[in-house]
Image (cartoon, rainbow, N blue to C red; front, side, top):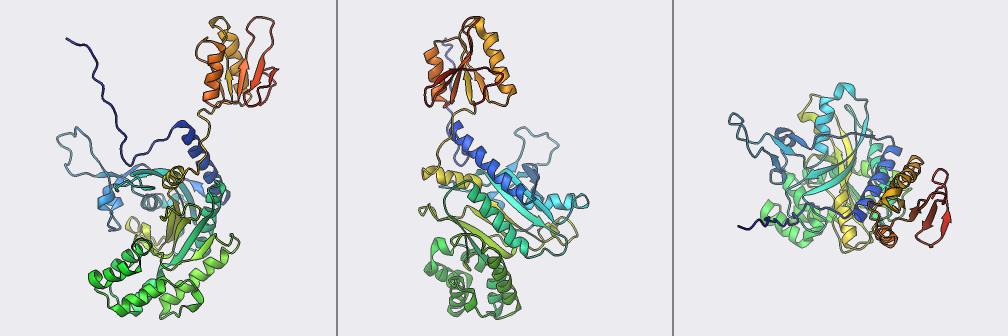
Length: 433
Protein backbone atom coordinates (compact mmCIF):
# COMPACT_ATOMS: atom_id res chain seq x y z
CA UNK A 1 0.00 0.00 0.00
CA UNK A 2 1.34 3.43 -0.97
CA UNK A 3 1.99 5.94 1.83
CA UNK A 4 2.11 8.81 -0.64
CA UNK A 5 0.39 11.83 0.87
CA UNK A 6 -2.53 13.21 -1.10
CA UNK A 7 -1.87 16.82 -2.09
CA UNK A 8 -4.62 19.32 -2.66
CA UNK A 9 -3.45 22.09 -4.95
CA UNK A 10 -5.13 25.32 -3.84
CA UNK A 11 -6.49 27.64 -6.51
CA UNK A 12 -6.82 31.41 -6.31
CA UNK A 13 -10.26 32.44 -5.06
CA UNK A 14 -11.73 34.90 -7.52
CA UNK A 15 -12.29 38.36 -6.06
CA UNK A 16 -10.17 37.79 -2.92
CA UNK A 17 -6.77 39.32 -3.71
CA UNK A 18 -3.49 38.70 -1.92
CA UNK A 19 -0.16 40.40 -2.64
CA UNK A 20 3.46 39.32 -2.55
CA UNK A 21 5.54 40.99 0.20
CA UNK A 22 6.95 43.68 -2.12
CA UNK A 23 3.43 44.87 -2.98
CA UNK A 24 2.12 44.41 0.56
CA UNK A 25 4.90 46.77 1.70
CA UNK A 26 3.61 49.45 -0.68
CA UNK A 27 0.01 48.82 0.42
CA UNK A 28 0.93 49.31 4.09
CA UNK A 29 2.94 52.46 3.33
CA UNK A 30 -0.05 53.93 1.45
CA UNK A 31 -2.43 53.10 4.30
CA UNK A 32 -0.08 54.82 6.74
CA UNK A 33 0.04 57.97 4.59
CA UNK A 34 -3.74 58.10 4.20
CA UNK A 35 -4.18 57.58 7.95
CA UNK A 36 -1.79 60.46 8.65
CA UNK A 37 -3.81 62.84 6.44
CA UNK A 38 -7.11 61.82 8.06
CA UNK A 39 -5.69 62.43 11.53
CA UNK A 40 -4.16 65.77 10.49
CA UNK A 41 -7.75 67.06 10.13
CA UNK A 42 -8.81 65.69 13.52
CA UNK A 43 -10.62 62.54 12.39
CA UNK A 44 -10.56 59.78 15.04
CA UNK A 45 -10.10 56.10 14.24
CA UNK A 46 -12.75 53.50 15.01
CA UNK A 47 -13.10 49.86 14.04
CA UNK A 48 -16.37 47.97 13.94
CA UNK A 49 -16.79 44.17 13.78
CA UNK A 50 -16.59 42.51 10.38
CA UNK A 51 -19.98 41.01 11.19
CA UNK A 52 -23.24 42.89 11.69
CA UNK A 53 -26.75 41.68 12.31
CA UNK A 54 -28.47 41.09 8.99
CA UNK A 55 -31.36 43.31 10.12
CA UNK A 56 -28.88 46.18 10.63
CA UNK A 57 -27.45 45.84 7.12
CA UNK A 58 -30.88 45.74 5.48
CA UNK A 59 -32.61 48.33 7.69
CA UNK A 60 -32.44 51.05 5.03
CA UNK A 61 -34.31 48.93 2.53
CA UNK A 62 -31.68 49.26 -0.20
CA UNK A 63 -31.29 46.66 -2.93
CA UNK A 64 -28.20 45.10 -1.35
CA UNK A 65 -29.42 41.56 -0.67
CA UNK A 66 -27.56 40.11 -3.66
CA UNK A 67 -24.23 41.56 -2.40
CA UNK A 68 -24.38 40.38 1.22
CA UNK A 69 -22.43 37.36 2.48
CA UNK A 70 -24.26 35.76 5.40
CA UNK A 71 -22.43 33.97 8.19
CA UNK A 72 -23.45 30.50 9.33
CA UNK A 73 -21.72 27.66 11.16
CA UNK A 74 -20.93 24.57 9.13
CA UNK A 75 -22.15 22.42 12.02
CA UNK A 76 -24.92 24.41 13.69
CA UNK A 77 -26.47 23.33 16.97
CA UNK A 78 -29.84 21.59 16.48
CA UNK A 79 -31.67 24.26 18.50
CA UNK A 80 -30.23 27.18 16.47
CA UNK A 81 -32.49 28.99 14.07
CA UNK A 82 -32.07 27.87 10.48
CA UNK A 83 -32.17 31.36 8.95
CA UNK A 84 -28.97 33.42 8.95
CA UNK A 85 -28.82 36.21 11.55
CA UNK A 86 -25.33 37.59 10.93
CA UNK A 87 -23.59 38.86 7.80
CA UNK A 88 -20.30 40.44 6.69
CA UNK A 89 -20.62 44.20 6.24
CA UNK A 90 -20.74 45.36 2.60
CA UNK A 91 -19.68 48.94 3.40
CA UNK A 92 -18.65 50.96 6.46
CA UNK A 93 -21.38 53.62 6.37
CA UNK A 94 -24.17 51.40 7.69
CA UNK A 95 -21.95 50.00 10.51
CA UNK A 96 -21.01 53.62 11.35
CA UNK A 97 -24.68 54.54 11.67
CA UNK A 98 -25.25 51.59 14.00
CA UNK A 99 -22.10 52.48 15.98
CA UNK A 100 -23.20 56.09 16.47
CA UNK A 101 -26.67 54.98 17.55
CA UNK A 102 -25.29 52.53 20.12
CA UNK A 103 -22.64 54.89 21.51
CA UNK A 104 -24.61 58.13 21.13
CA UNK A 105 -24.36 59.15 24.81
CA UNK A 106 -20.58 58.64 24.86
CA UNK A 107 -19.64 60.50 21.65
CA UNK A 108 -18.84 64.19 21.15
CA UNK A 109 -20.56 65.83 18.18
CA UNK A 110 -19.83 66.69 15.44
CA UNK A 111 -18.38 63.18 15.42
CA UNK A 112 -15.48 62.98 12.95
CA UNK A 113 -14.25 59.46 12.35
CA UNK A 114 -12.16 57.49 9.90
CA UNK A 115 -12.29 53.76 9.37
CA UNK A 116 -9.87 51.59 7.38
CA UNK A 117 -11.14 48.01 7.17
CA UNK A 118 -12.03 45.26 4.79
CA UNK A 119 -15.57 44.89 3.45
CA UNK A 120 -17.21 42.08 1.50
CA UNK A 121 -19.54 42.17 -1.49
CA UNK A 122 -20.86 39.31 -3.59
CA UNK A 123 -20.10 40.93 -6.94
CA UNK A 124 -18.75 39.54 -10.20
CA UNK A 125 -14.98 40.14 -10.03
CA UNK A 126 -13.38 42.26 -12.77
CA UNK A 127 -10.67 44.90 -13.08
CA UNK A 128 -10.80 47.01 -9.93
CA UNK A 129 -13.83 45.18 -8.54
CA UNK A 130 -13.38 42.54 -5.84
CA UNK A 131 -15.37 40.59 -3.30
CA UNK A 132 -13.01 41.39 -0.41
CA UNK A 133 -11.30 44.77 -0.26
CA UNK A 134 -10.11 47.59 1.96
CA UNK A 135 -12.08 50.81 2.21
CA UNK A 136 -10.73 53.99 3.80
CA UNK A 137 -13.72 56.07 4.96
CA UNK A 138 -14.10 59.46 6.59
CA UNK A 139 -17.44 60.75 7.84
CA UNK A 140 -18.79 63.59 9.97
CA UNK A 141 -22.09 63.11 11.82
CA UNK A 142 -23.88 65.76 13.87
CA UNK A 143 -27.12 66.09 15.83
CA UNK A 144 -30.03 67.79 14.01
CA UNK A 145 -27.99 69.94 11.58
CA UNK A 146 -24.62 69.44 9.87
CA UNK A 147 -22.98 72.60 8.46
CA UNK A 148 -22.47 72.51 4.68
CA UNK A 149 -18.77 73.37 4.99
CA UNK A 150 -18.13 69.76 6.06
CA UNK A 151 -19.17 68.72 2.53
CA UNK A 152 -16.17 70.67 1.25
CA UNK A 153 -13.87 69.52 4.06
CA UNK A 154 -14.26 65.79 3.48
CA UNK A 155 -13.63 66.33 -0.25
CA UNK A 156 -10.46 68.31 0.50
CA UNK A 157 -9.27 65.67 2.99
CA UNK A 158 -9.71 62.83 0.52
CA UNK A 159 -8.03 64.76 -2.29
CA UNK A 160 -5.04 65.39 -0.01
CA UNK A 161 -4.99 61.72 1.05
CA UNK A 162 -4.88 60.58 -2.58
CA UNK A 163 -2.22 63.17 -3.34
CA UNK A 164 -0.09 61.85 -0.46
CA UNK A 165 0.33 58.43 -2.11
CA UNK A 166 1.55 59.96 -5.38
CA UNK A 167 -0.70 58.13 -7.85
CA UNK A 168 -0.89 60.83 -10.51
CA UNK A 169 -3.68 63.29 -11.18
CA UNK A 170 -7.07 62.61 -9.66
CA UNK A 171 -10.30 64.55 -10.10
CA UNK A 172 -13.21 64.84 -7.68
CA UNK A 173 -16.49 65.00 -9.59
CA UNK A 174 -19.14 66.58 -7.39
CA UNK A 175 -22.89 67.11 -7.67
CA UNK A 176 -25.91 67.61 -5.42
CA UNK A 177 -28.87 65.24 -5.66
CA UNK A 178 -31.31 67.99 -4.73
CA UNK A 179 -30.81 69.53 -8.18
CA UNK A 180 -31.92 66.42 -10.06
CA UNK A 181 -34.57 65.49 -7.48
CA UNK A 182 -35.96 69.02 -7.64
CA UNK A 183 -36.15 68.86 -11.42
CA UNK A 184 -37.98 65.52 -11.29
CA UNK A 185 -40.43 66.99 -8.78
CA UNK A 186 -41.02 69.92 -11.14
CA UNK A 187 -41.55 67.47 -14.03
CA UNK A 188 -44.19 65.57 -12.04
CA UNK A 189 -42.15 62.36 -11.66
CA UNK A 190 -43.52 60.68 -8.54
CA UNK A 191 -40.90 57.95 -8.02
CA UNK A 192 -37.36 59.26 -8.52
CA UNK A 193 -35.58 56.06 -7.42
CA UNK A 194 -35.48 54.17 -10.77
CA UNK A 195 -34.49 57.38 -12.55
CA UNK A 196 -31.54 58.11 -10.26
CA UNK A 197 -30.34 54.50 -10.45
CA UNK A 198 -30.23 54.61 -14.24
CA UNK A 199 -28.73 58.11 -14.42
CA UNK A 200 -25.97 56.71 -12.18
CA UNK A 201 -25.12 54.40 -15.12
CA UNK A 202 -25.04 57.25 -17.66
CA UNK A 203 -21.28 57.25 -18.20
CA UNK A 204 -21.20 53.47 -18.53
CA UNK A 205 -24.19 53.02 -20.88
CA UNK A 206 -24.31 56.36 -22.71
CA UNK A 207 -27.11 58.91 -23.14
CA UNK A 208 -28.80 57.05 -26.02
CA UNK A 209 -29.19 53.81 -24.06
CA UNK A 210 -30.29 55.61 -20.88
CA UNK A 211 -32.91 57.55 -22.85
CA UNK A 212 -34.24 54.29 -24.27
CA UNK A 213 -34.44 52.78 -20.75
CA UNK A 214 -36.08 55.81 -19.13
CA UNK A 215 -38.79 55.93 -21.78
CA UNK A 216 -39.23 52.20 -22.42
CA UNK A 217 -38.74 50.74 -18.93
CA UNK A 218 -39.29 53.54 -16.42
CA UNK A 219 -42.19 55.10 -18.35
CA UNK A 220 -41.02 58.72 -18.65
CA UNK A 221 -42.12 60.90 -21.53
CA UNK A 222 -39.53 61.98 -24.14
CA UNK A 223 -39.85 65.54 -22.83
CA UNK A 224 -39.15 64.48 -19.23
CA UNK A 225 -36.21 62.35 -20.36
CA UNK A 226 -34.67 65.12 -22.46
CA UNK A 227 -34.95 67.59 -19.57
CA UNK A 228 -33.20 65.16 -17.20
CA UNK A 229 -30.41 64.30 -19.67
CA UNK A 230 -29.90 67.99 -20.51
CA UNK A 231 -29.42 68.73 -16.81
CA UNK A 232 -27.03 65.78 -16.36
CA UNK A 233 -24.88 67.09 -19.21
CA UNK A 234 -24.74 70.70 -18.00
CA UNK A 235 -21.34 71.74 -16.63
CA UNK A 236 -21.97 75.46 -16.10
CA UNK A 237 -23.99 75.92 -12.90
CA UNK A 238 -24.80 79.55 -13.75
CA UNK A 239 -26.84 78.41 -16.76
CA UNK A 240 -29.20 76.26 -14.68
CA UNK A 241 -32.52 77.92 -13.85
CA UNK A 242 -33.97 76.41 -10.65
CA UNK A 243 -37.61 75.42 -11.06
CA UNK A 244 -38.41 75.03 -7.36
CA UNK A 245 -36.96 75.51 -3.89
CA UNK A 246 -35.26 72.10 -3.82
CA UNK A 247 -33.34 72.81 -7.03
CA UNK A 248 -32.35 76.26 -5.78
CA UNK A 249 -31.09 74.82 -2.50
CA UNK A 250 -29.06 72.14 -4.28
CA UNK A 251 -27.47 74.69 -6.62
CA UNK A 252 -26.59 76.95 -3.72
CA UNK A 253 -24.99 74.11 -1.77
CA UNK A 254 -23.03 72.82 -4.76
CA UNK A 255 -21.80 76.32 -5.63
CA UNK A 256 -20.62 76.78 -2.02
CA UNK A 257 -18.73 73.45 -2.01
CA UNK A 258 -17.03 74.19 -5.34
CA UNK A 259 -16.05 77.66 -4.10
CA UNK A 260 -14.49 76.15 -0.97
CA UNK A 261 -12.39 73.80 -3.14
CA UNK A 262 -10.83 76.53 -5.29
CA UNK A 263 -7.49 75.95 -3.53
CA UNK A 264 -7.18 72.57 -5.27
CA UNK A 265 -5.34 72.34 -8.62
CA UNK A 266 -7.36 73.24 -11.73
CA UNK A 267 -8.03 69.56 -12.48
CA UNK A 268 -8.72 68.71 -8.81
CA UNK A 269 -12.49 69.15 -8.64
CA UNK A 270 -15.33 69.89 -11.05
CA UNK A 271 -19.10 70.04 -10.88
CA UNK A 272 -20.68 67.11 -12.72
CA UNK A 273 -24.46 66.83 -12.55
CA UNK A 274 -24.44 63.32 -14.02
CA UNK A 275 -23.11 62.09 -10.64
CA UNK A 276 -26.06 60.91 -8.51
CA UNK A 277 -24.75 57.74 -6.76
CA UNK A 278 -26.85 54.60 -6.82
CA UNK A 279 -27.58 54.38 -3.09
CA UNK A 280 -30.78 56.23 -2.22
CA UNK A 281 -29.74 57.27 1.29
CA UNK A 282 -27.72 60.14 -0.23
CA UNK A 283 -29.72 63.35 0.01
CA UNK A 284 -27.43 66.22 -1.03
CA UNK A 285 -23.78 66.49 -2.07
CA UNK A 286 -22.42 63.42 -3.87
CA UNK A 287 -18.87 62.59 -4.97
CA UNK A 288 -17.04 60.34 -7.37
CA UNK A 289 -13.35 60.33 -8.29
CA UNK A 290 -11.59 59.69 -11.58
CA UNK A 291 -7.96 58.71 -12.24
CA UNK A 292 -6.94 61.14 -14.99
CA UNK A 293 -3.64 59.38 -15.70
CA UNK A 294 -5.19 55.91 -16.11
CA UNK A 295 -7.65 56.58 -18.97
CA UNK A 296 -8.22 52.86 -19.59
CA UNK A 297 -10.05 52.72 -16.25
CA UNK A 298 -13.24 54.80 -16.23
CA UNK A 299 -14.70 53.73 -12.88
CA UNK A 300 -14.66 55.67 -9.64
CA UNK A 301 -12.10 54.80 -6.95
CA UNK A 302 -13.50 57.15 -4.33
CA UNK A 303 -17.13 58.09 -3.72
CA UNK A 304 -19.69 59.14 -1.14
CA UNK A 305 -22.04 61.92 -0.21
CA UNK A 306 -24.34 63.56 2.32
CA UNK A 307 -27.08 61.56 4.03
CA UNK A 308 -29.89 63.14 5.98
CA UNK A 309 -30.59 60.54 8.65
CA UNK A 310 -28.86 57.22 8.10
CA UNK A 311 -28.82 56.38 11.82
CA UNK A 312 -32.58 57.02 12.10
CA UNK A 313 -33.28 53.33 11.63
CA UNK A 314 -31.43 52.56 14.87
CA UNK A 315 -32.11 55.53 17.18
CA UNK A 316 -34.82 58.16 17.62
CA UNK A 317 -32.43 61.03 16.86
CA UNK A 318 -31.89 63.13 13.73
CA UNK A 319 -28.24 62.54 12.80
CA UNK A 320 -27.27 63.94 9.38
CA UNK A 321 -23.80 63.19 8.04
CA UNK A 322 -21.45 63.41 5.09
CA UNK A 323 -18.62 61.11 4.11
CA UNK A 324 -16.36 59.79 1.38
CA UNK A 325 -14.89 56.32 0.95
CA UNK A 326 -11.67 55.45 -0.87
CA UNK A 327 -12.03 52.04 -2.50
CA UNK A 328 -8.44 51.33 -1.51
CA UNK A 329 -7.94 47.81 -2.88
CA UNK A 330 -9.80 48.76 -6.06
CA UNK A 331 -7.45 51.72 -6.51
CA UNK A 332 -4.37 49.65 -5.68
CA UNK A 333 -5.26 46.84 -8.08
CA UNK A 334 -6.07 49.20 -10.95
CA UNK A 335 -2.70 50.93 -10.60
CA UNK A 336 -0.87 47.63 -10.14
CA UNK A 337 -2.35 46.24 -13.35
CA UNK A 338 -1.46 49.50 -15.13
CA UNK A 339 2.18 49.04 -13.99
CA UNK A 340 2.05 52.32 -12.07
CA UNK A 341 3.21 50.86 -8.74
CA UNK A 342 6.91 50.46 -8.07
CA UNK A 343 7.12 47.38 -5.81
CA UNK A 344 8.87 47.81 -2.49
CA UNK A 345 11.51 45.58 -0.88
CA UNK A 346 10.75 41.94 -0.22
CA UNK A 347 11.72 42.42 3.42
CA UNK A 348 11.39 45.25 5.94
CA UNK A 349 14.91 44.42 7.19
CA UNK A 350 17.49 47.20 6.83
CA UNK A 351 20.38 44.99 7.92
CA UNK A 352 21.19 41.31 7.48
CA UNK A 353 23.62 40.00 10.09
CA UNK A 354 25.81 37.24 8.72
CA UNK A 355 26.14 34.02 10.73
CA UNK A 356 29.79 32.95 10.31
CA UNK A 357 29.42 29.67 12.24
CA UNK A 358 27.37 28.08 14.98
CA UNK A 359 30.19 28.91 17.42
CA UNK A 360 29.78 32.63 16.58
CA UNK A 361 25.95 32.64 16.83
CA UNK A 362 25.97 34.37 20.24
CA UNK A 363 28.20 37.17 18.91
CA UNK A 364 26.08 37.58 15.77
CA UNK A 365 22.83 37.58 17.77
CA UNK A 366 24.23 40.21 20.16
CA UNK A 367 25.14 42.46 17.21
CA UNK A 368 21.62 42.08 15.80
CA UNK A 369 20.11 42.85 19.19
CA UNK A 370 22.24 45.99 19.61
CA UNK A 371 21.17 47.27 16.21
CA UNK A 372 17.49 46.57 16.93
CA UNK A 373 17.70 48.38 20.26
CA UNK A 374 18.76 51.44 18.30
CA UNK A 375 15.68 51.32 16.07
CA UNK A 376 16.78 49.30 13.07
CA UNK A 377 15.01 46.35 11.45
CA UNK A 378 17.51 43.51 11.55
CA UNK A 379 17.42 39.92 10.34
CA UNK A 380 19.93 37.35 11.59
CA UNK A 381 20.73 34.80 8.88
CA UNK A 382 19.28 31.42 9.76
CA UNK A 383 22.22 29.04 9.11
CA UNK A 384 26.05 29.14 8.95
CA UNK A 385 26.15 28.74 5.18
CA UNK A 386 28.70 30.08 2.70
CA UNK A 387 29.08 33.85 2.90
CA UNK A 388 28.26 34.21 -0.80
CA UNK A 389 24.93 32.48 -0.26
CA UNK A 390 24.12 34.75 2.68
CA UNK A 391 25.01 37.81 0.57
CA UNK A 392 22.82 36.52 -2.26
CA UNK A 393 19.93 36.16 0.19
CA UNK A 394 20.30 39.82 1.20
CA UNK A 395 20.42 40.86 -2.45
CA UNK A 396 17.27 38.92 -3.36
CA UNK A 397 15.36 40.52 -0.49
CA UNK A 398 16.73 44.02 -1.24
CA UNK A 399 18.26 44.34 2.23
CA UNK A 400 20.49 47.41 1.90
CA UNK A 401 23.22 46.51 4.46
CA UNK A 402 25.02 43.28 5.39
CA UNK A 403 26.67 43.12 8.81
CA UNK A 404 29.75 40.96 9.44
CA UNK A 405 30.32 40.16 13.12
CA UNK A 406 33.85 39.12 14.14
CA UNK A 407 34.66 35.74 12.63
CA UNK A 408 37.27 35.33 15.36
CA UNK A 409 37.95 36.95 18.73
CA UNK A 410 39.79 40.23 18.43
CA UNK A 411 38.41 41.15 15.01
CA UNK A 412 36.22 44.19 14.31
CA UNK A 413 32.63 44.27 13.15
CA UNK A 414 32.20 45.40 9.52
CA UNK A 415 29.22 46.50 7.46
CA UNK A 416 28.77 46.41 3.69
CA UNK A 417 26.58 48.84 1.73
CA UNK A 418 24.93 46.62 -0.89
CA UNK A 419 24.20 49.54 -3.21
CA UNK A 420 27.74 50.88 -3.67
CA UNK A 421 29.75 47.88 -2.41
CA UNK A 422 31.58 49.90 0.23
CA UNK A 423 32.62 47.88 3.32
CA UNK A 424 33.81 49.58 6.51
CA UNK A 425 34.51 48.86 10.16
CA UNK A 426 31.54 49.61 12.44
CA UNK A 427 30.35 49.37 16.04
CA UNK A 428 26.82 47.92 16.50
CA UNK A 429 26.35 50.20 19.52
CA UNK A 430 26.94 53.43 17.56
CA UNK A 431 26.55 52.73 13.81
CA UNK A 432 23.53 54.09 11.97
CA UNK A 433 22.35 53.45 8.42
